[in-house]
Image (tube, rainbow, N blue to C red; front, side):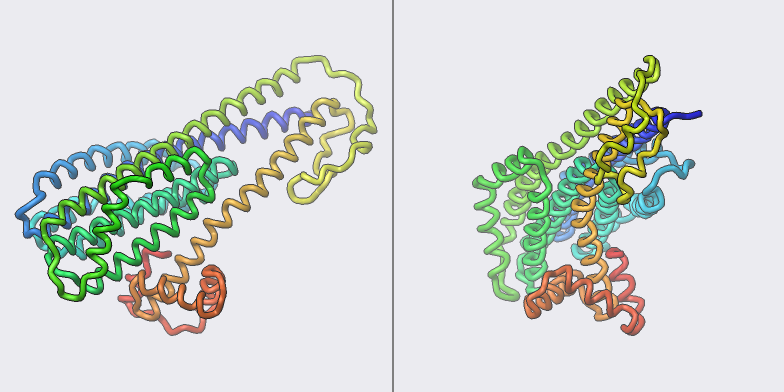
Length: 433
């Protein structure tokens, strides 16, 4: 007959398997982040190439594309290493669906590059295409964060995801500003887009600081105190305060791109630190779990000592047992060795604490899901852009003195009574599902 120790050992082996899966997912997130960084730079250079009518930045763009191709090959190799045959991966359905979507985009990437090279697309069309692909890659990272079963790993993933999302908004700012400068003329719509992107960066980076470990937060804070940030603010004022149709200095396009790139390279250094912390945390937890497993297995080889049959009932019920079952959930048999009973209780308390911490961390991700869904609903039914939908919700929150998440919930509660969205509205909102 299997004893309590048998099941305790099995539980520890399951924990190790989950941590190993998290380590593989963390490695996937690492490569995904590198490709996103490369595509962000490629997007900016493509805008400069298109905006200059192919007269400038061609060689820089070509070198960047080659670098992205190499990283893409690494990412595809990571996809190949994933177990797609087993149904044991708890978040497999969502993660694999995201990967399938991303692969569709990666397969179309060469066509996008050709359209940019031949000037067949405008800077806005090229930017939107890159944004959609990068959004798909970020969704893979989001699923990794949403599925993490360890609270410490989950916090690291939430911090990393929000930092990567903030960096993506910074990349969109670089691409939008590059297109404005190289066009030589201010345009009110694009200026509003810039303001929205700046605000979106700040929002994501605020969430990052809430979940990041102190060293990563300090590294980010230190990277902000620089002349690069002062120059960026100066160029932002040039772009955002010019009147509609006013001339812009085309020569500042290179200055803007280089300034934004320096900031994004610093952000990449912080992102690399977050990714390294994530991998190390996985490795440390796997090593600790294996050491505990060895200790559990060693107990099975020692002669059991006499145990008081009533000791089970004499202990105060553990309030930390998952599911609120108290001591009854620990009924592993009257002859369970006393030391093993202590281990079971410790394990139950640890799992309950982890569950509570995990709920706290996931609350941030759940709020993001609801806000994005509400924005998508407004985009589909009111024919709004992503910036307009977000601005509408923020204005509603201010007018009603409510939190943004509360407004999102109210918007979603009206979904059933709204008229069916148009085809263009559905396409516009698809990326927010």
